[in-house]
Length: 502
Image 1 (spheres, rainbow, N blue to C red):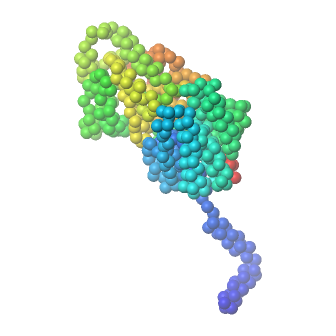
Image 2 (image 1 turned 120 degrees about the horizontal axis):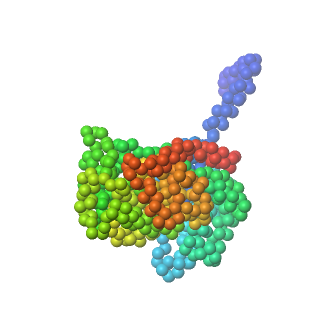
């Protein structure tokens, strides 16, 4: 021990003599700080299917990749999130069971809602306080507000963490669709949402209109974080289109009810041809007589009146027949064979592919099965998260029926469509023009007849002579290149996250 003491004494004396001991102390303190520093951590909370919550998936990726944080996602299961999320080593998914009280709901709907909220609250608190490591900040999706906001507020208090709400819409307005705004349950929900929403340490929202509403009537200062598509939303290459249509060949060519203009196609995953493409000696071509592909994504909920699309499809079919001088006695199957063999008309066949899951899906599928259409076919699908961007990037037009229960949010599906350079026909409501620029990247409609008119105008001369459609596609491509999620998040979200964490 004496020898060691003498050695350290000589070392110290030498450093003092050279006037550098302060450098050693500084280096030692820096090393100790770096050794003990804990990587920041965020918990992303979704009381719903994370696979159907794209904005919260993008938040998680940005927190991990751009803020260099460990991320715990607490959400219900159901659909797989995007592959980039599942393979990210900094993102950890904690799946809660979905609460279903079907037996009690048959006896009393109000009692079932109350018990469901209590059980969800207990589950959330258990996961947020005991199942995940202590986060520095919770980022929670709203809606749903009950019981999410109260559970996250309690967890943030117990764990000494901060709390940010991402306002996608107002939960009380969604509840009002089924109960009416004056119902006592809706009024209680409104109070709950406002009370606990004001307790957050920070807030994001999706439009300037919502930011104004939160500031003026809720006393909440929110940062506008516009939805933007991530980099994996882009126009598909010919090879990507051919691969997708080959994989979806059986689904595309299987009629939902009566035989139609697409079901006559003979395609298969291992064949060199699809309804849209041909692969000749390794080179992919788009068929000149291919149908126009129209895509719509929906959650099959009351805030999207899907009957508008079905009526517009029927009107397009009848108006094209009238424009071409066809009568009801025409042999439809012979017409389809002629088109399949290369015959072209001034108006193309339309294939509508409708993606999504939700409560009203079966009701509308039953209506589709009863339709008898000459130049229109409809398909409903649920795609893998990796195939959905490819479908948008392969389509000719997108349709959005979202009208917003509050009139203050914007449809994420339109953002994704623009990310793929896909022009959009969107249902008109109060703030949609923050996103859709009429005659630049899309069109607006209020009725099924207006949508049918737009389909007739855009697809006349398809695929080569449809100048109006080509002009909108150019505008959508400009929208795609103007901003991506990573840029929007770094500019508007990251400063707030850093400020809240302190």
